[in-house]
Length: 143
Picture 1: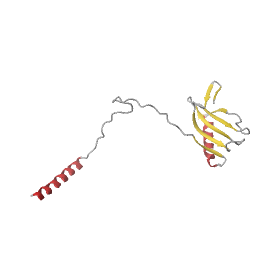
Picture 2: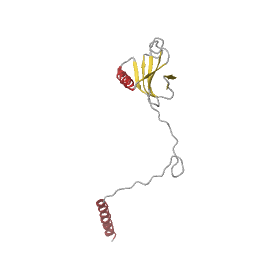
Picture 3: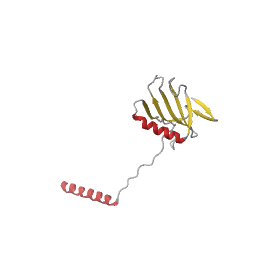
């Protein structure tokens, strides 16, 4: 739904949904749902729709302040335990982007330098001594 209020555009298709709340069951005349949105310009609004006896008998967009949005979200999260209301956070979907071409010229592939191994000098000397002592008995057994 798209609505212009005081020269500001509120559109549920382009705004980001932050949270939602269902009151009642689907099809009930007094049941309704509210969804909290934020626009690209940082404006908050609530979209509500519901049955004929609900506060939202017709789909409605109601602009609100950030403070009111925070209060609404807090109240919604507190109501999670109430059996009549279903609440939750909206799922955020990531936009997929086409990977850029790397140095290899193929999309999505970039060159990586090999991982460097750090070896302590004491470990290197101990490993060399172990290798030498292992080779000496083998030479003696062959004689």
